[in-house]
Length: 162
Image (tube, rainbow, N blue to C red; front, side, top):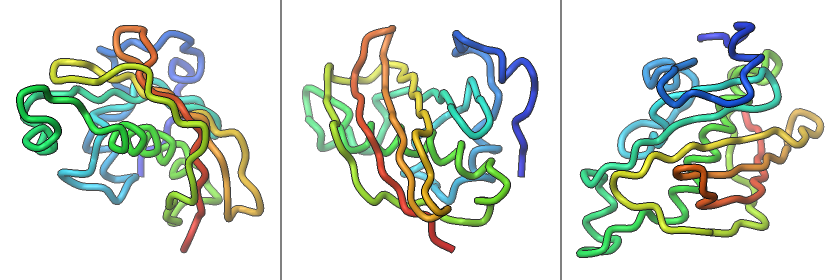
């Protein structure tokens, strides 16, 4: 599995969406998700054990746009939250003592949708680890932005299972 420890990745404060720390192939080595549920195209910034920033290019060819909503396509909010959680999963799967575990949603709190996400948008997804308790439960703060505008934010609780 890839390990992200480069000084450039740790020092970055403004991620460059044209730069890749992890490609989609490397993300697939970390996360169990596959089409159509792998929602992160690449990781563009990473601070080990703390924070990750991912990118999702939203195209009109996404399968969910056929039914949500025909004539006025909007990315479903639950998929935006899932994409934020997948970026958080990259943080967890890089932590040595958690490798090999599966992270599953245990809850979501304080989620707010601030603007619609439509075809052609590029989502910048940030996940920050708040805490892990007894290597079994934890909490992350996530946010999704389009062109510097907040599209979604919230807290995600997770459970770690073998």
